[in-house]
Structure formats: structure tokens, C-alpha cells
Image 1 (cartoon, rainbow, N blue to C red):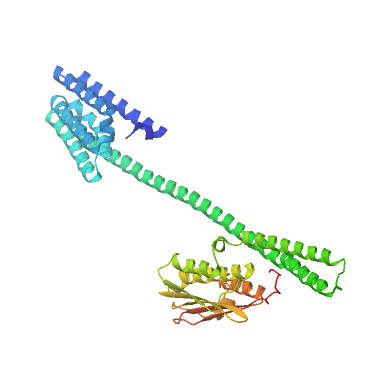
Image 2 (image 1 turned 60 degrees about the horizontal axis):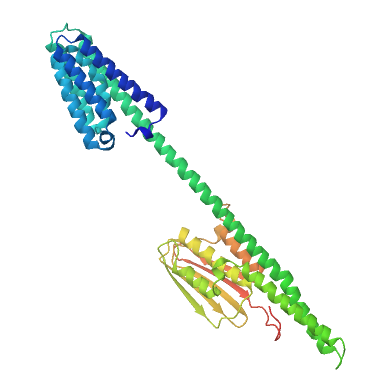
Length: 391
């Protein structure tokens, strides 16, 4: 394990393991009956120190396995020379559990415990229950400690990832809410400017034109009225530019029909989508375009989330006195009566209906379980203005 990734607790545990290994090897070297035992104990210490310092052992699982194999072989030589070498088995348990996969580490720990017991028996030490219980209990404690820590570490990592994802999701949600609020405020301002300032300037133009026609020939006031009418016309054009600038981004680079066609070309869900334009398109006021686009987006969103449809058709029709939008799918359908009777009916359909009614239009939903859904909205076309007067 890379030392830079260790927490303070793990650094302390690692230091304790180093000290334990050094102390047990020193004990075996001092109590060894022959010089060979002391030499082998020193050799094990050198191999252990090399593994702790070499980057390849920390970074490569293969190199770590080879180093552990050399360390265990040296330990077997120490067991052959002195019974005190069996105490080194305890730090070896932790190394085996840490460096080897579970399918290999558990058998290795069991084999190490058995070899420690056999070494004690081979050196004709006095037999007692502690001879067998000690190594086995040490192995059990090591297994429980390491596996318990690994479980806690995995759980901690899972919770950490969940917290990171939660923070990221919360940030994305906040950004989406800010964006939605910005778009809603832009739409509100565009609607207010169109319904008040733009309509007022349009009325002023009509009144000035009527006054201009009522003036006698050669009246000195004609020039003033003409300049006032032109000023009102210029300001109305400026107001219309403000309204266009505040319109939804989908309408900034084309007509309503183009925005609806782009809506059908890309988006979530597996249903096929088709857009159809019927009649001769006419220029619509910005509130009309915004309302029809938002209704189409909301209806399509409901289809993707709830209908499980295979096909969706969006039709925009221009008639003599009205413009209509139809969104039809072949999904599972529902009972429209539940929208008003259920407290969980949602806000999408009421919001679409409110948009249509705010412009003097009608909104209908036709559906039945298993028979798909048809959403239709019809808005009356505004009366054409006299020549020279802009909407």
C-alpha cells in the first residue's frame, strides 16, 4: 500500500506491525541455541525491511507475493533452527491476509499456524493446551481483525461515494432549479412586456393614425402626429426585440415549427417521434410561441415518463382563425378523470391548461387505459393589424 494513501490510524497500525516483527525477531535471535538461528533471524529482518522500502513491493501484487514467499521460506528455516521462531507467525498472519486474495490468504494463515505448532512439537517442547490454542487463537484474531477492517473500509468507501454523489446531485439540482427559475422569469418578463408595453404602443399607433386621418388638410399638427406615430412604432419595434431576447433558447434560433422539429429529433426515451406542420405558417406573438412550445415539451415529458409509448406524433396546424397543437402517443393511456380526483395527479396537465387559457385558448386531454393519449391545444390567432403597425 502506498504510504501516501494511509490514514493516521493505518500509519499507527503499520508502525506497530514493524515493531512487533522487529521485537519477535530479536527475541528469536537472542534465544537461539546456535549462531545459525541468529543469522537466519537477521536475514528475515533484512528481507522484511527490504519489502517495506521497495516501491515495487507496494505497487505490484506479483512482486509482493514473491517477497512474501521469500519471507515465509526464511521463517521456515528459522522454525527448523529454534522453537522461538513460531512467535513470528503472528505478524506473518497479517501480511498474508493483507497481500494475498482471500481464497489464498485464509489457507496460508491456517498452514502457518499448523507449521508453528509442528515446529514446537518437533523441538520436544512440553505439550499443553496453550501450544495448540496460542497459534490458532492468534490466527483467528488476525483473520477477524483484517476481514473486519476490510468490511468497515468497504462500507466507509461506499458511504463516501454516496456522499460525493449526493453533493454532486444536489449541486446539479440547484443549478437546474436556478436555470428553470431564470427561464421562468424571462418568460414572465416577455409576457408582461408584450401584454402591457407592446400592446400599449400598438394602441397608440392606431390612435395616432386615426387622429392623422381626422386632421384637416394642411393642419400644422400633422407633422407632430406623424413624428409621434413613428416614435411609437420605433419603440414598439424595440419592445419586440426585448421580448425576442427574453424568449426561450429553443426559439432564439428559428421558428416555433423548427423548435418543435428539434424537440422530436433528440431527447430521452425510446419512442419514435414525428413532427408534422399543417397549413400556412404565420408569425405568432412570442407568448403564443412560448406557450405552445412549453405545452409540447410538458406533454412529451409526460409521455416519456409515464406512457411507455412506441410512437409519438406532434402536429402544429395553422388555420384561418386559430393555431392548434396536437401531441398523440400510442402508450398505455389513463383515465383523465383521475387528474382532478387524485391528490397526486401532478401539476403538468393543470399547468398546460392554465397556459392555454391565459391566451384565450382551449386545452383538452383524451385518453383511456390501453388506448394512448391525445393532448390538444387551440389558440385563437390575433387579429391582423393595419399596414404599418407592428405587433
